[in-house]
Length: 394
Image 1 (spheres, rainbow, N blue to C red):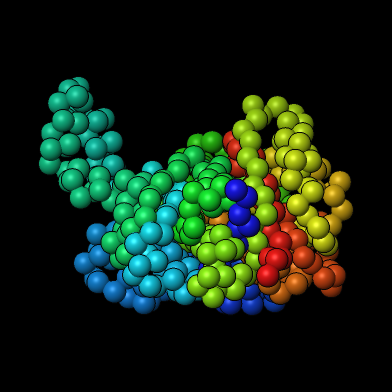
Image 2: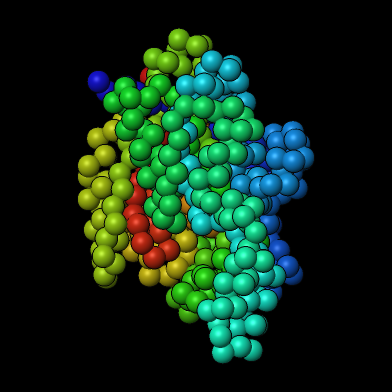
């Protein structure tokens, strides 16, 4: 069995807006990136637009027991369910779900307290045991569990089919989509909610990226122009969920396609000079036959110079219009691939690329009609992947 896979719902939130329409208008008008340089200096992040959480998470108690990244995921998932007109209880009962998630948020105050006390005692093991008993409350651990995003989506929105949670930075976002696509194409699932979320306003996450030398502290917004000090990442808060559905299932319930998810490919190279370019070229060779019309590219490039340049070496061989989302909304790690797939679906829906936003000359204006979008997903330190979105066969 080889079912066509449709995208029938989109739920996205970012620094540029709430929902697909607000985000499309911001991208298409080349709206300036929204940056917060004051909350966690010297780092600039793309903050989440103000949301009325009660529109998708009605109970205050549910909101309180989630961390920020979970609220963003649950909110975006609700938008996707609404966009897919999939609130029917019987449909929700058998709706599958795959979430790409990180390791949860830390209690920074407790972390700082413990590290300070560790410098003041010689019996660190005993001190840690005491803090585990007194400071690290069970509800904190619940808030940190990666699969609690899926759990909260189930509680708040009533999604009760199978549930899977993938971890692994950028690669997990694409693998979640790849798994959902494969299951639907094989007839193992009719409908699946898939996506992820990320909160950039986290001191612990910025510290981890800084320890790896990945944060971008320069002024350039465009990922293609970040050349100094090996470039880097500007983190962005976002949530992105897609409703994937077999074409037959969508037709039976009268739901039109936004676009079709034609193919997904993933890889993990041992990073050596030229390996990213070779990996992308090999995957493109495997899926290129699914692109039947005029092509555009939405890149998940991070801005880390070496990785971004190797990706660009591959993209320029194809020679079609390129757009990079991270220049506008920042980098959302696990949620970047789902967000870029949503952007790709909107480009297919509108039949064209959105406006360029680039000071390096990589992104050029284009008024050409577009029927297919290639989405790239090159992780900041590991994981490579491609996905192809195109017009659905009605």
